[in-house]
Image (cartoon, rainbow, N blue to C red; front, side):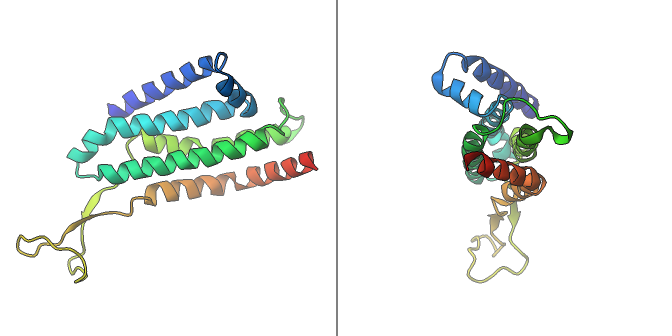
Length: 193
């Protein structure tokens, strides 16, 4: 249910920001440089990450997941969005407004393919609450250097690697988006030369 609310908030906020881009100069410039599709995908990623983190924090705590590390993951995703946004800001300015003729749509087609490959998956992770890592029991024979609880020497609970979901998802996204990004980089170099 929370995921559905996060999706509704994401869609509503993305539409609202799209409409607001007519009135706010910075949003208007971002909409123009990111060619609409980039604006929609990047704002959806940012809103989905924030909405998902806010809405899933309480249920993550009740489920024994680390809220602190979930917010660290949200910060990583927002940093990722900033990097993609900066790349799209500079590359998008060199991309033609229309798709080229032939297969793939030319530079615009590569731009759209790259954004679709590297952005939406992390938005989905944020919406479904996947940013909050599980806290698991330490191994049966814990390292003596690890902290132990005072109750009968039971192993301490420790969180999973907090960045694992973000890193794996981003890695898969970039594996899919590497070829379109390479084509974009070549078009950008050719356009600036």
